Length: 210
Ligand code: SF4
Image (tube, rainbow, N blue to C red; front, side, top):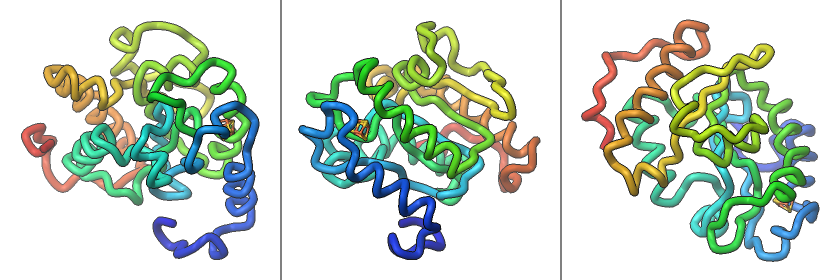
């Protein structure tokens, strides 16, 4: 567990119940092939929620989201913009690994929606970043290409939602890194404007993104 909670039994009761519901979930067929249910990493009460597609092989092995090559690229971007793990909560549309790293099916995404909604109401984020086309599609129920919608705020109720590329796409198309960098600049600036995060200590410098 991150932050002030050292283990499961120190968590608020609502979180304990939620994590138990995740661990025992068999609402879709992905439970048959998972090694672990992958729920989140980061802060339980973050203002910023990052939502990806689903766990890959490394995530399934380690039980945490975004810990493979893509996750490391995302982490280095966040670090370069002075986000710490205390500033965000990161999770996925589905909590169990789709075999062969395929995208989750609509049935699987739909089955996992209840758990994501419960997670949402526990974390209470103000800013949501949808990482990649699949997260965008299932979270917004729309099918626009991610290249058309990334970098533009969507306002829904009290939430500000930013779609962006998936870091796996950037690993294949490094020239697109500038786009994802700029999307996160907007996220950071929005959070600072809304007093949701401390001010950055120095100007944005993309060459700090390793
Ligand atoms: S992906 Fe979600 S709905 Fe499907 S078994 Fe895993 S936790 Fe349950």
